[in-house]
Amino acid sequence: MNLALFDIDGTLLNADFDYECYLEALKTGAGINISRDDFNWDNYNDVTDLGITRDVLREFYKREPYSEEIENVRKDYINNLYESSVKTPDKIKPVPGSMMALDIFNKENWKAGIATGCFSGSAEIKLNAAGIVIKNLVISDSDEYISKIDIIRDAVTKIKKKENTCAFGKIIYFGDRKYDYFISRKLDIDFIGIDSNNSGELQCLGVKNILADFEDKRLMEYLH
Image 1 (cartoon, rainbow, N blue to C red):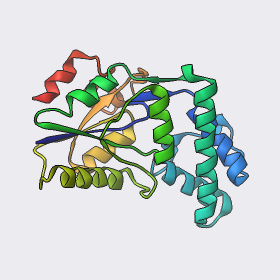
Image 2: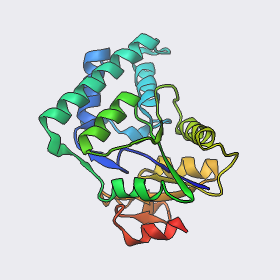
Image 3: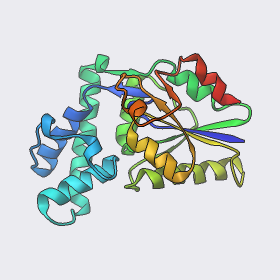
Image 4: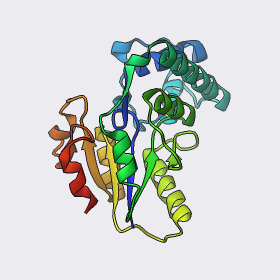
């Protein structure tokens, strides 16, 4: 049995209002005002909702943030995402073929799961707004884990238990960022890049397996 794990942002879907929702949450939930030009997810060591929030608050407060301070930002961020998804539903869209990919990699000798750096609440809102139905897939998120390494490990452990298996013959991680690629290398699992925004970032890193989206005919090659 093999395992396919999927990231959410930039991989299964694209949400144009993500940055704005998060920066507004920092402002209202923590009193931190950062402009869009001065903020980039990729500038942080752990590109997860929890990891970024911890690091931003740590940098601003010059100390370790309290759990309630992180919670204030988390709640405001999730509320902002929900409001934006209702007001501007056209700004969040599934990557073409994402539902199909979740389905075909969850049949026969494959199992599918989601390992995302999102908070569980932000993941749920984005997936629902994009019309991506998860069904009974295992989802590991950033509610408890700061590092994507731990999130992926958690997903693997949960799916092993669910499927009553000790190991997988192959594990593939579908992601869109250089962070996803480096994490996959550290974990010694296969990586397939999704470049739905045509950024070329993964290609510059020398990633061999890159798809524009899940409608790419080469996707089926990875089933074998």
